[in-house]
Length: 344
Image (spheres, one colour):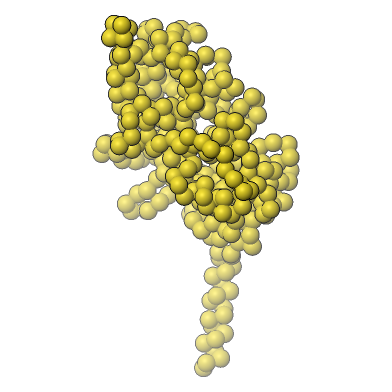
């Protein structure tokens, strides 16, 4: 009887392992190679197929100020090959070594289903540069499969204000990734920067892992734009940096606009104050300036943030809904600016 029970236990264990085998570890050859894995599980980033338990060397992290993506929750992970280190540039961007990977899952939490992941985006640093790949989760949530052409999914959520809303969630196609991630024409990570990572713990953890070598460059810390204890101008600049600055910078896809919304931008006109649009169109809403200090209701920036019209809305990619809390923050910031009469 004892032997029978032992055999039964071993059989059950074998069946469980066959249904959900443990990851043997991260497959560096798939990150740095020239193939396109057809499923997320092939990389070995996670110990479980539900992508909740990162494999050794895959480190979860969060940003001080995250990009708004239609109220989706995001789960971020970074992987750096053993023995390699992360450098930084003059703007505090993290320069991950070849063989690194950034993994970001998007999903919504439902009372009856718990967390439902919709997609996982993977950035792989290969010798030829960064490669961006979108993976869409299948119906039984056992794995995510490569969808280079992207996908649209019907989603129903309840917004923070309690309003229920149904919309079409867009998983970007592989080419659309360049719309946000292109810097000087090449794909690059846009979220992890020194200023947007340091809450006093994350960079210390990464440094302890040896990712930064001996030291981390001095840097200014960007606040969480949702933290109302911070000054409104700091919060607004953080919001614009993470939601707009990846395109609206001097080397980004929107560099020809002359509107630069990064955290470090010091020129008030480049930041939008009394700046006229390069090309007036429907996006201007008939207003004169990107930002008219003291008058958010007459500022093009607000007009475009409040729109869901594909020809007007900003950002152009990555959102189908209006971020009400973000609009309120930028409204408050512009309203507090002294206009020309007040500034005299």
